[in-house]
Structure formats: structure tokens, C-alpha cells
Image 1: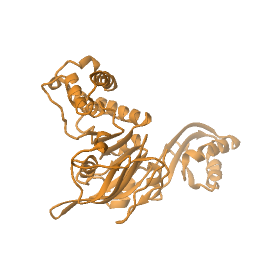
Image 2: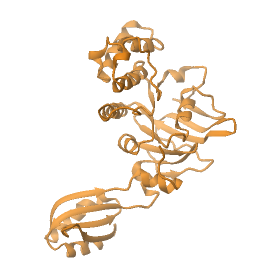
Image 3: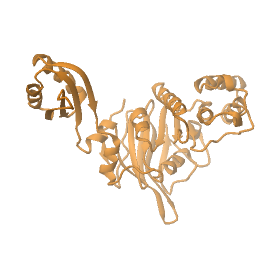
Length: 333
């Protein structure tokens, strides 16, 4: 979808450009007194791409997206949507944005439908178009049966979904979500993540902030890792993991002459080592580069070696290892 490679960011790094960047942030800086909350952050998000800002609380993620939305004026740098600069006073660029804040921003004494109408009227003047979009968003957020219920009667997960719906009713080109799953139950979290995944697949650009590793890995085409106000690396999950030079582990539960099979696996160029392991010595464990590409060759070698493979498990290095490598600490809550 995008042309990128993982890079560790320097102080004067340029934004990584995509084939069709909808959002372009260049050298954003924001200070609060002597505290620099965001220090020279540059990034791009393409149409149809989900870009994740991953980092601990206090990393500067929310401040960054508030500058992208025009809610905060940067001390230096700029944010552009479809080539148009985002300004705090409004403008055409802001009409292309849908912003989902971390805190619920709804009117509790109004119904679900009334909330959607209210936020839709900020952008849509045609009443028929507004009603059509309200119906569509009710369906997208799975709230049709609760449309006439007051928001104060909804569960936390439903309020979160409606919070997203309020940002969608005017059909934005770029959806910005700030920690949308904080404080919700697992079922509601799954529903929210499924919806966000669908938005990207349908062509919307999505900028998604989170401090949950699994959310970033599951949802995002590219990930920018933030810590202490800086974007310290970005790329796909695989590209980021490559920064720490870790390898996949392939566990092959099998029967046959496993010692001989492990020795033959170890002779393959992408394999750094292979051995027999497991409580019953019935598993070959191989440390490899790019396990998914190599797996067909490992299975073919097993067949030629007279080894019967019962199951395969690939254990990949994760973003936690990347964050630890780049910052020297685990991801903080």
C-alpha cells in the first residue's frame, strides 16, 4: 500500500512520503513553558492507510494530533490535509477531518440520533443528506436499535462507538482517533478495532494513537513510535522489528528422524540455527530470518527427509522488543 522502510528518526528527519499522502506533518514542535511536548515530528498518512502513533502516556501523541486537527497552534512546523494547511481558526482542511478525542465528547441528555444530527449540522446543510448520513452511521456503529435512547443510558462501549460515529457523520477523508479503546471491555474493544480496520480498507486515511502494542500490530499499516515528544522510528511492524535484528522462531512438531532433519534445516542460508526441543523431543526449533517466506522450503525439506509435520508455530519478535531496544525501557503505561 505504501512505500516505506523502517527508520530511526533524527532531529532533522524528513517526513516519509507515500504515493498519495493525504496528511503531511512537517517538523511539528509544541512547547508548554520550558517543557517541549512535541519535538520536530514529521509524518505522512495516505488515503486508505492506517497509521499508528504508538507510545506511552505522556509521549506527545495527543499534543501531536491536536496540532493536526487545528486545536493547538504549533510553535513551528505545519500540518496539511490534501495540500491545504490546517489552521486553528478553521478552513477547508478541517472539514476533511473527523476527530475522536480520548474523552467522550457527547451530550448525555440527547439521544443517539440527536447527537449525530447535532454534529452533522456543523458540516452538512442539506437535511436529506444529513438524515441519510445519520442512518448510515447508526448502522456503521451498530446503534440503530438504540437510536432514540439518551446517551446517558448507554454502556461505555456504546458511548465509545457513538463518539466515533459523531466524527464520521460528515464523511471525512481523514479519521483521527486518540486512544479510542481506553476503559472499555474486551467485547467493545474488539468492535471498535474491527470498525477502524474496515474504515481503512474502504479508503479512509486513519491516524490512530495507542499505547497498546497489540492494537498497533493488528490495525496499522505503518507505525510511528513516539517517546518523550519525539518520533524515534517508523515503518511496518516487520520493518520496525528488523531494526533490532531479531529473528523468528519456527516450532515444528513432528515425528521421524528429527536430529537429521534439524541438521539439514541448519544448512539453509536463512536459518541461524536449528535443534530438537520439547518435553518429548518431538519438536524442531529453527531460528530463521523471515519465517513465513521460508516455511514452504522447511516443509518440503521435511517431506524429503521422511519427517511428518503435525503442527507449525511461528513466533515473531514484537514491538515490545523494538521499543525496549530504542528507548532502553519497556513501554510505560
